[in-house]
Every structure is written in C-alpha cells, then in structure tokens.
Length: 271
Image 1: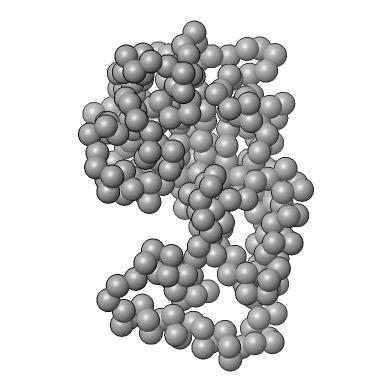
Image 2: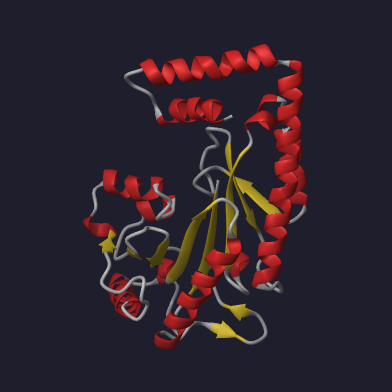
C-alpha cells in the first residue's frame, strides 16, 4: 500500500536525545528547523512543536504516519517539519537528533530515495552529521548504524491470514533479515490484516542493496498472498463472499466503530 524511507542522522559532537538536557534539546530543535529553510520543499512550511499539541493532535499525526508512537509520548522539546503534501517530514529529537522521512504510494522506493537523498545532502551542507569512515553514520540505536536507512512497506495480506499461513510466511521473511511488525512499527498491534515489512541491519550495506532486498521480499510475499487468494476463492467462495458482504453491510449501517473493527471491515471490502 505504501513505501516509507527513513534516514537516521545525528549532529556531530552532540549527545543523543535520550541523554540530552532540555536546554540542549531546545537548541537542537531550533538549529534543525533553521536548517530546514535551506530545503526547498520545507522552506516556509509548517513547523510543529510536540509540546504545543493535545493528546488528540499527537494521535492525529501518528495516524497519518507523520510521527512514530514514541514521538507522541515523549516529553520535552521535540518537533516536526513537513511539506504541505505531507510526504516529506523531518522529525527532530526523537530517538535520534534528526529523522528524514518520505512516504509514497505503492512500491516506489526509487522516486522516494531521489527526494530523500537530495534532502539529506542539502541539510548536510548546513549541519555536520556524526559520521565515521569505518562504520558510517552514528545513531542512537546500533541497528541503524551505517547508512541509517530504514525502508518499510505497508502490506495487506488478508488471504494469508484467512488460510492461517501468515505466521509461516512472515517467519520466512524474518529469515531473509527482515523485520515484520504492526501498522505503526515496534510494539504496535496488527489489525486490518496490515503488516509493516522493513529491513533490520544497516551496517555494511549500501542504500541500493537495502532497498533491493526489501522490495524483493515484498514481491515474494505478494506471490504468496495471491496464491492464497486463489485457494480461498476456489475452496471457500461462498464463505468469502459472505464475509465481504457482511463487512460492507456493517460499514454502511453502523453508527459507532472502534478503529480495530473499522480497519478489519475495510480490509474485507478491499479484498
């Protein structure tokens, strides 16, 4: 359904956010926001301070994949810069000083990487990234050291869930060095038959290699899902049609739905 590319970056000589004092975080936030004015898609566009937001506003940003759950719960000077299309965001003082993120529809890493790489280079001319020749970019989490690139895909696998094959297939993906999580990343629940597939290690791998391996695994999962849909359609067509029509009926008639129930019903209709 969607491709997200994210780069983790930190400023040279500055302590990581989880150990930094509040006044240091405030300076870092203003420094990065000022640097964002040098990036054409971000110049003059919104800067959002998390401390100014209500809990509902923070949830709204998370539901639109503009911030991660950890960012909604963190205290102190933290913020987001974004363009008006909401497909390019700069997160400041999350786990790392800076996280650059692009989101695009479908499986489209190449276009997203072109944008992200250009933003990274432009900010790198204003800010000095923490970098070592032998290991690459230095990050708060050892799993991001190296390129700092995390590519994640939001994938819809309803037939594999119906045939109870999804656990087996996702274990295969983990064997390829991939991580499979819930919709909103680490620790989040799986609902609506939506899964987030991403690379795990970044050290010792190029950006192109990471994107190629994640896309390759996604194509394999797609094949498994389409095979499962053929099986369900062939062996349980009436039950499948009944499930879809019931879901459609509830969505048309219900007045109150929880997020989980709504996503599960929408998943059936999409199938």
